[in-house]
Length: 114
Image 1 (cartoon, rainbow, N blue to C red):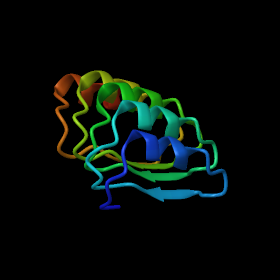
Image 2: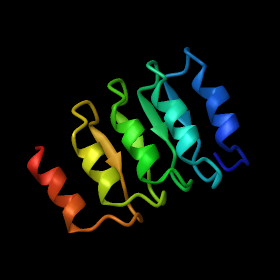
Image 3: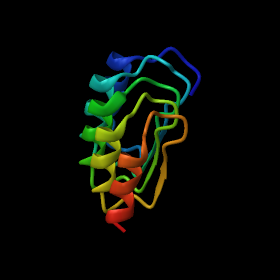
Image 4: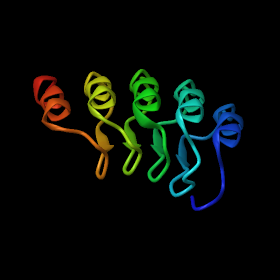
């Protein structure tokens, strides 16, 4: 956390298959491409990407990961489309979406998938 890691760094870290927890918060430079690479990692169970810029595309990719149980996506410019995708994930037991741009439409998606 609190480095200058961007998409290329996230892609490199995504190749590590021994880590189960990864904290990449406050990098401000990881966008959708980095999130998509991290979403393909099947050993991570906890991922913190707070304060980056993954947006809806990154959120949609991470929503497809079935090994993550804890995901922090606070402050990532995620809107309703990303929230709807994340609401469909059945393996997440902890999800932080504080300070994004999710409206009632995105919140309703979580209510319907409980």
